[in-house]
Amino acid sequence: MALEFRSETIKIPQTTGAFSTNQSKPFGEKVRTAEVALKSFKLDAVGGSRPSDIVQVTVRLQSIGDEDVEYNVTTNYSGGNYTGEVTVLVIADIEYAR
Image (cartoon, rainbow, N blue to C red; front, top):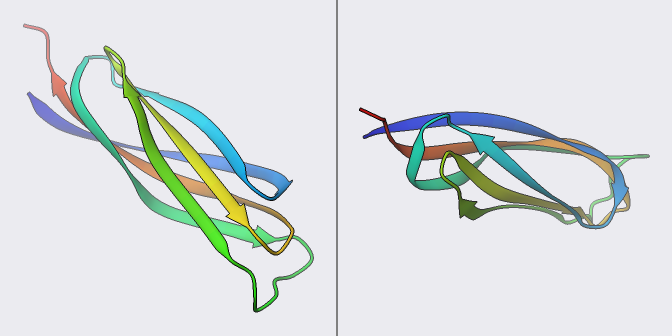
C-alpha cells in the first residue's frame, strides 16, 4: 500500500451562475481509500469584477471505483459571467497487485 498524489486542472468555460462537472482520475491500480482537496482556483469575471461579488468553489469526493476516483467540482461567481480553472489534488491509497 502506498499513497499517490495526482493533480488535475479543470477548465471552466464562460458561464453565468453555478457550474458543476463530474470528473474521474484513473490510478491504474486498486484504490483502497481516497480523498480530494482544492489545490488552487482562478475565476475571472467577464467585463470586470464588482466589490459585492461572491466566489464559491467546492470539490467533493463522489465515489471510489476499482482503479478510479470520481469527484465533483462546483463553482459560482455571483457577479455574472465568468471563466476560469480549478486544480484538484486527488490523494489515493493504492493497493499494488503482487
